[in-house]
Length: 255
Ligand code: ADP
Ligand code: MG
Image 1 (tube, helix red, strand yellow):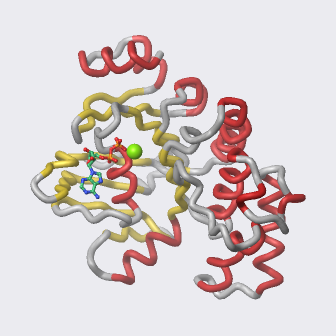
Image 2: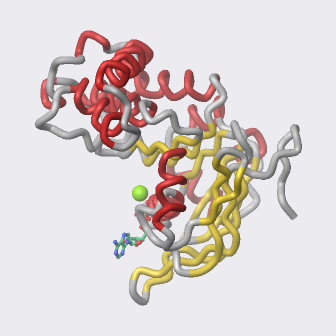
Image 3: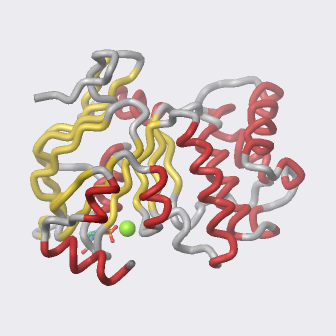
């Protein structure tokens, strides 16, 4: 039974009975997940539980072998198949931010931001630069535009990575432990940008162990263990009354 938006729309992301193996290793088992437009989901769970694999499957950085993954693009439900057109259509809607920033070290910040809009979206250079500068202002580092990634702090680089993803005007943002590689004093500046994005109504899937962020931003917290979604719920319930033993053990270790 499909979850519907308040306005009756079908889910923006839908995973049905998704299974994935790396060779013999069953990394994702019977994953069912429906995400409403504008929903913020935090995914947590032990290292190796399949969190990265799960979100990487949504933009086809990894391929699943069984089940269905579909994303709503311009009101149309598009399934991830081997059809390159479908993959491209979905990738345009899905921005991704990694733990390790993944900026191009030999390009300036501005060029990092305009590369995809110019080459993939065929935006004129001036227009791409205007968009890039407005996003750099939004993540509060417009003065860094002409520098190279190596000249920026980790927190600044991660904010550039977020701005770079936003340059493609995605409807959905995936974050894979965006603050895990940062020195503690830089975590907040990145979380603040993510909170702003959430408040603007972005659909977000965030793998993180920042439970403060989960409590204040998430509509739903999902706990994964050994390739399965073990438990999920609104943060209040999830943290106050974890039902599963594995969730309780995990939370007792990180809180
Ligand atoms: P998490 O993000 O929760 O730490 P991952 O999705 O990265 O977990 O990994 C889940 C499991 O799959 C781990 O046991 C990991 O070693 C394994 N794995 C991840 N990527 C690959 C790969 N490319 N080939 C084989 N095994 C992999
Ligand atoms: Mg991971």
